[in-house]
Image 1 (cartoon, rainbow, N blue to C red):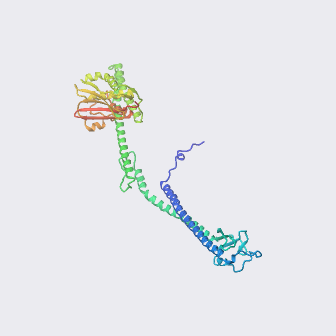
Image 2 (cartoon, rainbow, N blue to C red):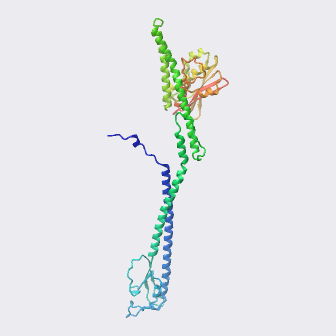
Length: 459
């Protein structure tokens, strides 16, 4: 079975213009629909109120006619109620009120008015039923059914509802078309930015996006993007410099190995093979150390974290590391003093390595006869600072800015190149970051302090 291509599996991009226009259309339709519905309901309620008012007025008239007309006195026992005189007083009520229908009955149900029940016309009617009590002078009461033809009102209300619905739809459509145009115009700066972004590449990261004439909402985003381009440009420059430094550092031991092997092979009588192999092994160890250090930095850059274990005394740990550097300190005529102490959870092997690098750096640049200090200072927020201080030549600010860069040396001299390849302080900075901290460096009047700040981990 053929596997689906990456193109078919990729999610389809949604158009911001279409989404904004659609939401504007929906909101417009809902808003206009709500307004039209309110108008429809208000008119319908007013219409119903007018109908009730008309029925109430007619009810008052009918009551008056039934209570104040002698024609409605109780009939004789031999009289027939249905044979009302032709000029019944209620006839005046229905004249000119063809949309009203009146039916009057006695309490027993006998028809009083009209003489004959009208046929059903299928009209829509609003009706009201009420009772008229007997007059004070005697007589009988009546049951009255009054209805009004509201077919024309219902048709008018129906036409109004259709008109309002069409108006809401047409209004929403017009607003949507206008919104589509406005959104398209509003997104014009974004399309211009897309054109600018097309000119960017790995070889052209120094170009910055033009913020002139951009909306105020986009200016902070563009400023952050330009800052990101600056950091990317710096990263590419550092990468290029790193490649050049790696090539330079690897070229020297490789050239030494090639030259010694070629000479030993061409003139075997002049060289002891054991000495050649020993010299080559030393260079190979140096190459292996460099490669291992680069792999460690690569892992640190990918976010590797320190493996924390309890360390009861940082001062005791520093003393153990100092014993390893005792010979080098004595050879340089330096004294060592450890100040302060703290505890916490750290990666002890990495911490030993960082302190060893700091001591080696201080031993290399300290003034003979001076004192090297290891200061351990607890900080707020479960942090601790480990600083190695020494007296020597002042370090320029531009050197301090790069002192933790890879393959960087404070001096152009390569007298210590056989032992150090410029990764010691870079590794120290990486160890600080792996512990959730950062490196520190300051130099004032020949007093230089280089160290690391570490998070102490879980207490």
